[in-house]
Length: 560
Image (cartoon, rainbow, N blue to C red):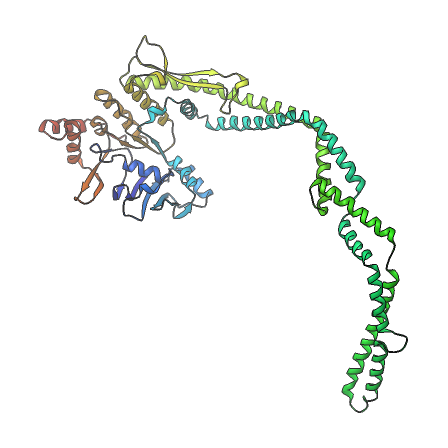
C-alpha cells in the first residue's frame, strides 16, 4: 500500500507531501488546478520516462519519493531480497530528474536502473489513465487485456518463445536453400584454391626462415671473407694475432705476481680472455666451412618465396596469414560439402519447432476462448450497472490460419459492443458515442482490477463522459474496490467524490510573482464545501451545502 508521497520542484509544484490511507481516496479541484499532478508524479517515481521540462523553473532538480508498506506483499519482498534491496516491511522508491535531463533512481537508498524501478512499480501500483478508452480500440491492447484477465500472460510468453525459435530455424533453412544455386560453383572454386594451397604445403614459420636463408645466400661471399679475416686476426700464422699478444701479456704479469699478489687477478682475466678467443676462433672456423655458396639452392629458395607471394596476393592476405586462410577455406569446403545433411537437420528441427509452437498456441487459444466468455459476461453485467441495461459486450475470437501464425498465437481478438437491444455488435473503433465507450472502458478496468493482486489502484479521471445517476454507480463500483485495496481516484464528479473514504483538494496558489500547486486533505466540513462547489459552481448556496452533506452522509461504510 502507498503510505506517503513527497514531490519537490515538479512543474508548478514547490513541495507537496501527503500521507495516504487504505480505502478509496479522491483528488478533486477546479479545472486547470492540476488534479492529476500526484498521478503524474507517481508515474515518474514508478519508472516512467522524464525530461528536463518537468523540473520547476529555476530549480536544479525535481525529486519524487513514494513510501510503501509491503508487509503483506511476499512477492515484492522476495524480489527486493533477490536484488539485495530488501528493507524489512517498507519500501522507499525515489527518483531525481536534474535540470539537464539526467535522471537517477533509488530503491531503499540504493542506486538502481530505471527498469528495476519500473519492475517493482508494476507490482505495487496499477495506473488507469483518463484516455484509456481511446486506446481500447487498438487490437494489441485488447489482446493484452484478455490475457491479463485470464491469467494467460505467462502462457503467452511461452508461445512467443516457441514462435521465435521456430522462425529462427526457418530463416536459417531459407538462407541455406537460397544458397543452393551458388553452392556448386563455390565448391569448384574452393576445390581449385585448396589444391593450390595443399600443393604449396606451406610449413609453420617457413616464410620467415626462407627469407633469412635468402639473405644469407645472397651475401655468402661477404660472410665467408669476413669470417676468414676475423679468424686470421685471432690466430695468424706470423704470430701477430690476438692470441699471441694475450699470451705474451700473461707471461709478463706472471713474473711479477711474486712481488704483488693482486696481479694474480689480472693473470686470471687474461687466461679467461685467451679461452674465449680460442672458442670464438673455433666457431668462426666452423661457420666459414658451413657457408653454402650453392647457386642451385639460392635459386630454389627464390622460387619457393615467389610461389608463396603469388598465392598471398591471390588470396589478398600476408604470407604469414596464408596457413590461416587455408584452414578457413577447408572449413568452408567441409560445411558446403555437408550442406545437404545440414539442410535435412534444419528442416527437421524447424518442423519440430513449428509443431511445438502450434501445440502451445492451440492450448493458449482454448484458454483464451474460456477467458473471453468470462470477460464478456462480466463486462456486460458491469455495463448494466453503469446505466447501459440493454448493452452487451463481446470478446470475439477468430482463428488465424497456420500460414499466418503470429508470435502471440493463432487468435485474432476483437472487442465488440452493442449499446442497445436490436443493434448489431460493432467493433469498438466504430462505436460513435464517447459516453458509451467511457462506461464500457470503466467496466473493463473495474473487472480487470477485481482479479488483480496489485495493492494500489489509480484511476485518473476514468469517469469522464458520464454524469448523473451513472456517476453514482461508477463511484459505488470504485468504492467497492476500495473495500479490499487502496484506490486513488482523480475525479470531477461530486457523485464519485462523495463516496470516498478520504478526500484531497488540489488548488493553485499565486502571490502575483509565482504560481504553486497545493494538495490539502479535507475534513468533513471542508469536504461538504468542496462537494458543494462541484455541484453548484462558483457560488455555494445553502441548498448546495445541504445536498453535499446529504451525499456525504450516504456513502458506504467500511467493511468490518
